[in-house]
Image 1 (cartoon, rainbow, N blue to C red):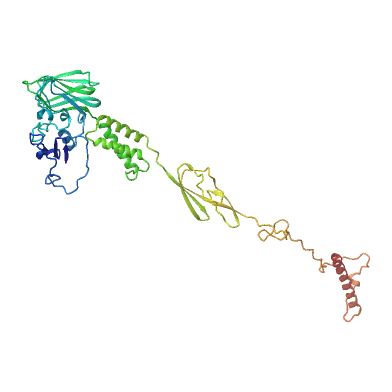
Image 2 (tube, rainbow, N blue to C red):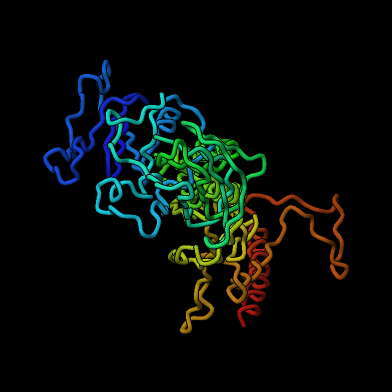
Length: 461
């Protein structure tokens, strides 16, 4: 559904076809009772057979022509655009000295009506059934003119003039300043004149310069359309590439993931691509913006995790891949009886030491390494042995004294050279009851005891 409104008429299109028109119906410009400004939408035909809601609303700052509405409804690519519409226009309809100026048509049939977008229908109709009755510019003389200022220089590839009544002949002229005009082509008037140019006209100002009238009648110019070629082929490809890239990155409008430039460039490019009134200049700007965004994507941030393990208790931090640890360490851990020595890639401290300068390329776990503290020395008893280290220097136990040697009774006595040797046959057995033998034996024991006691006494002294 498309609603088109100008200062003269309101039109409703359904599926690209004109459905209803509202316009001034009376010849009297002050007949306000007939100046209709609204109508009820024909709901029986809008969305017929569709159970849903109206969405995808687009608002344009220019009235869409019947041709443009048809293109959009049929899904056709826009290849040209009327760049003269709703710009600035003026005409020389009268000569100085003309009488009867205070008449309705002279006041109503002015220049801007020929560039407002209210032109012929697709089948060429332009009567009051489809438009306001005075929706055109009228020139009263053969040399009457109609000029358009497109507000900036354009590349014009085609000009279309729709006539309610054409002159016999006219010229197309261009100008860079609106004062000095150059002839481009002389044309014979028809119901619709379509003039194409192999080489586009580079100009800001266009003029229809009347040459001769048809049967000395005034001419009535309903619409002048100046077209520039529009090529959205490259833009369409870029939009498609951007959609694939956004999907690959998992980016949405709600979650941009840092790709703001790409999201904004895509939104602008897609809007221009779908805009039926986008000029070629806008198309090229959107192409450049999206192309730059695709070529300068920020590197996808990849995070890695460093886990700090203190005797099984873990804490973790996340860093960008390739970043140094820096000050991302937790506070130095404390452990009673031990001193913290640092972080290491192995629990026993035999791995790589991890410091603030360590570059993290992947997930890793590092371990707190501790060293056991030494036991302090007791100042009042420095020689007191350390129970944890009994062999500590200065704590050796004194050696015990040698035990006194005992006589070996199993060994035979050595002969005394000063004592006479008794031969075996001369030895007499001790007889029981012999009084000499016990006395001799006791004497011998007493002598041996004196020797042992003497040795012990000497050692104790």
